[in-house]
Length: 217
Image (cartoon, rainbow, N blue to C red; front, side):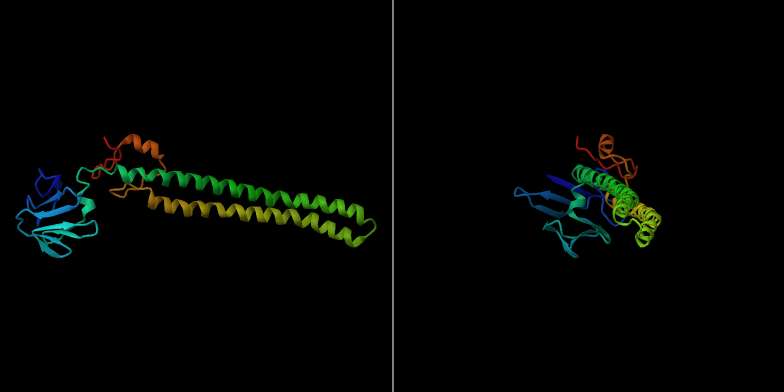
């Protein structure tokens, strides 16, 4: 397999840079699976890790420079056919995890809110029963019962409201991270809250300057 690199449109990996030659270099896959970068008599040279080369085996961590300033890495060149299906497939887990986290936050907080709001009323009833058995003719226990009856519901409403107020911030936190992670693997455009399966049916990024392939043919 040979990937032709240069400024001309007949290359596999087209580079739009004035300092890159029309046919600048070739990337050759060897039988053992290694990649060989070969300069194609370019005007401004081909460099690997800032050293000019004519021919050199390269690895994914090597920095390749074409001409004076165009920087690229092996993984970018290997995307010459714009196929990002492998990276796009990983977005399914990101979307599923986000939806599950939203549901968990909402259901958990609703349960806690209802618990805080209903528990004081149950407590009032229990105290009333205890006072009924033990507090006959005892003014101190009657005062305690009155205090609990008045204050417990108020405290419950306050705690319930406080718990409810946490929901927007928790949802915002996971939404902020989702906006960072759920993006086109090529151009980095946020994909919204559109289900992954729906995006898969589109097959490619809608951004006109990207058009990354999300599904292999």
